[in-house]
Image (cartoon, rainbow, N blue to C red; front, side):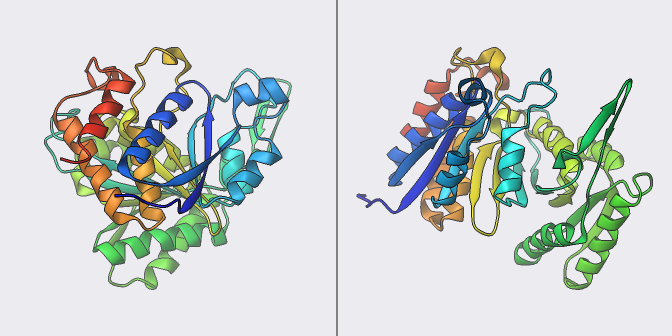
Length: 337
């Protein structure tokens, strides 16, 4: 089908394997029939080395002026104390307050492949320890954590509304037994929000206990909502549940902007080796299609990815030998199946 250009999409490829997987996602979108004008912008460690900043103001403006953004991955060097994370800055400066991460098992992949696991994690995206307030004094270091009722309420409401719309249970994550008063505030806000959604079955879980339970029986959970730091850790645990970080997409949603990225990092150790799994980036593009209202294309893309995984065309992170391009080509070939 011929489609006219309908959207302007910002593209931030970033570092390491970021350019490889984003190129794959754009190629799949083009072959799918999604017509858009792509606006390339810079961010990340290479950008810092070239321009002295990991996130130029120009990049912020490009994203603000587009309908959505695709983001690869960026390197955040630990050895540079004053280096700010480009993706954390993006989330905060664009008020991308909701990080949505769906985790789904596929037959034959990972130790839970034969179980039906489909979990949607709602992670608050602008607060917590990621506000970047801290200091070091001789042999001691300190970080400040901020949890506000306003930010907690809006991510909790988004999770509960999803629970209502899809008739799913909600699990609220906290560590209020130890981290006081910040996690107490998050939990108290959850109780207030839950009153607004009496039809939703919900429970509160202490984060470390939840980690154990997700390993033992992940199929018992449907919607999880967490503060930023807890949500970050749970994301990698859930990636292990479904088989690989390379399979996992995410959406960063704000009131005015949206940004879609694979959950994995820049993986500089395999950059340029054609080993990167493009599925996370491709499924992030699928989330973008849903956000832009093209559910038909999103469904076709999701089905194509499922067929590729079932046919065992897999990159090394999933135990296969296929290259990034071979997996990308396989997805394209199955778009019309």
